[in-house]
Length: 177
Image 1 (spheres, helix red, strand yellow):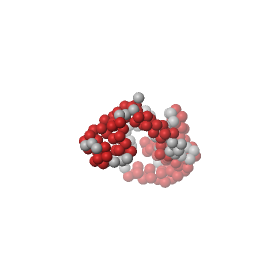
Image 2 (cartoon, rainbow, N blue to C red):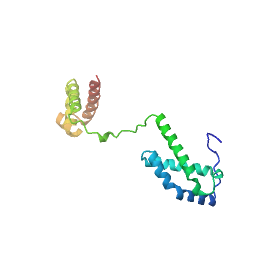
Image 3 (cartoon, helix red, strand yellow):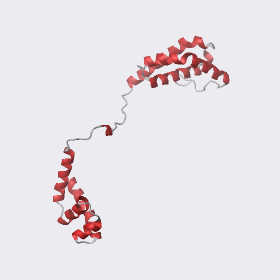
Image 4 (cartoon, rainbow, N blue to C red):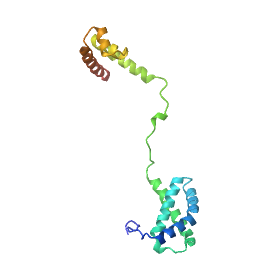
């Protein structure tokens, strides 16, 4: 034995299957109701405890009487002890916290974050060179393609691409300051 449990399970045969089926049919529903009361209505916990109770019966087949009807007091004692152990275990363990679904929370309606972000970007844009500011205005604010921005600014498309890249890097650096 290791930790109070047998390491080798009882032999599995048709006689054992029939006995366990008879045990389940005779006592499972009463045990389930009993365990639901002990777990304060937690159906999943009651089912887990019911399965553990039946597993204990299966592990102790050789020590139990063959008359299934006479096993009810033993089964209820095992079930009650398992429920007590489970409750003690929950008290010792810290409360489990799952991940919070942030989409459930309402969006910030006052827009303070948006106003602050816009002000930060405006201030950073003001510190850029005129060339960088103009290319960002055409590409991002006016939502023009590289070809359209090049035509409006009177510069080659490649220059629009490189200035946009340099302007974004400079803007990022200014926002971080």
